Length: 131
Image (cartoon, rainbow, N blue to C red; front, side, top):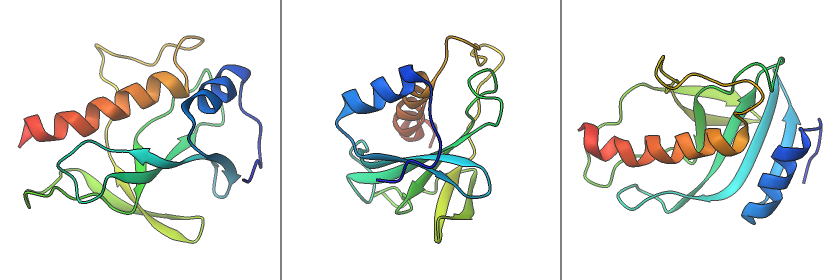
């Protein structure tokens, strides 16, 4: 597994505790890749590699959005909104343009990869409540 940059200790502890394989890569920014990440029922696959772009000012600067490989689609054929393609690591990733809200802002020194992945799980579940 590639470790091209270091993460804060709490992020390493969280990632190690999940049992997922993970990497850090530097290509047009810093990225954390989490392999074999489980997605809820209703999608075309049951697991993906999840990528997070790590802001240069992290952990003060926030993590925003999420990227998936393979691309997710809904099994019921309904479209998923606010998607784009992002090229990095020699692959075309599916970017989900999802952001924190004023009611749920990034909290420096509190929020981290763990809290962002909780938000990612919420986005994956919420998709079926939106459409």
